Amino acid sequence: MDNGVLIFVLAIATFAIVIAVAMWQRARVAKLKHDPERSAFVDNHGTAPRPNRPGTEH
Image 1 (tube, helix red, strand yellow):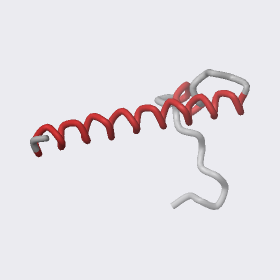
Image 2 (tube, one colour):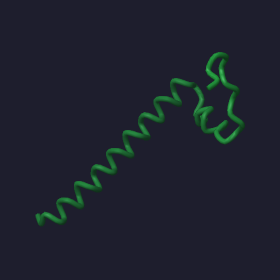
Image 3 (spheres, helix red, strand yellow):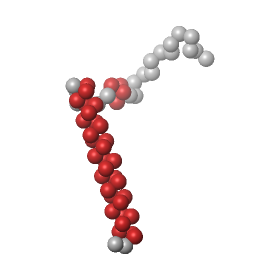
């Protein structure tokens, strides 16, 4: 097998493995949460920031 083809096959296989692991972990989290929704961070991102905690003002 040519080295160029081997590198291409390894790159595609690595990409496929990463996607498969990410999907598996996403399914695990959804199952543990008993909710397939995205995290609250994604839902609330972009809103006004929460106020500083007392004693943390600079």
